[in-house]
Length: 380
Image 1 (cartoon, rainbow, N blue to C red):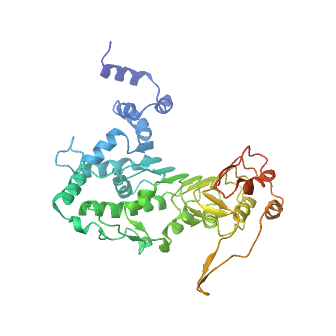
Image 2 (cartoon, rainbow, N blue to C red):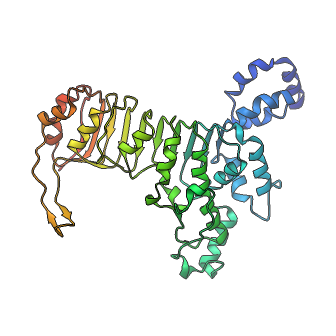
Image 3 (cartoon, rainbow, N blue to C red):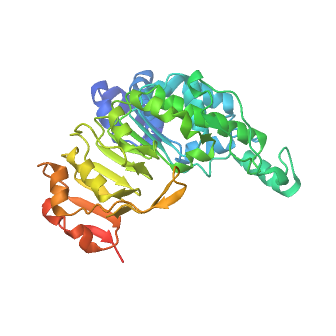
């Protein structure tokens, strides 16, 4: 049996370079890491494949990112070493999966990660380094650079990384985080938005809601709506622009196909048709008239899931009258729905309207959804 080194040399001399990319597409990162060390020719072929997808939840990255500021480094993989690595190779990254908030900083500071196709941000709660975790526990036990009685005070507020960010962010409570931790959180959030801004080729953008635990993005700043129009190539969006109007989102990214939001507003009517949109999944509430108003302009929508659909307007507070007002009775049934659709045929295959007062309220519209086998709903 030949040794590994002899085998590598022999394979290296036999395999033509043209087939290496085909082989590389089937290899795991650990295997690719071995391949880049065979020769300069192999390195040139396999480095782009190794860096194509960076997943910070993989054990190697997780260990490096949790220990880089420790006094007991493994292999001298400190902050400077990590940054140099991204400076050299970040231009190869096409898919970035973030479980550790420091990835935003290392990738952002490289200045070369501008060809992303997919950016996924997962839960970041466990992204503190081991040293940060120890410092936080010390603050809780003994009081350190952040005393426990000040854990509800506003945290560190630093400079902004772009003039576009002026007045857009405010710090969260310290939550007994060390000062170092607060600084990293403050800048990591900004690096995320810079990453979105400098990657107009993004097709897939998914954001876990606890990104906002790093710092608060002021809704009134409109920062996300300033950045959204630059992402014209988005195909799938999951939660990065929640609490916004569906109409505004579609105006900015008219070719998007799949939308998944914690909350999105249906109050503003769609003015034009968006033939690309196929999926809307949201926990939002909407009036039945708004639902059909949306369907009229989404002829190829096949999946619609909402948190609550209500059949009538409820009382509301009129500030001018300084009193609660009963809405004008506005019955909405099958014929009214047909009128709103204006001859548009729904292609819905999956309709889940979440909570509704009575199943009969929604089932009356079944003739308008011939491709839906059964309307899903929860009712009294």
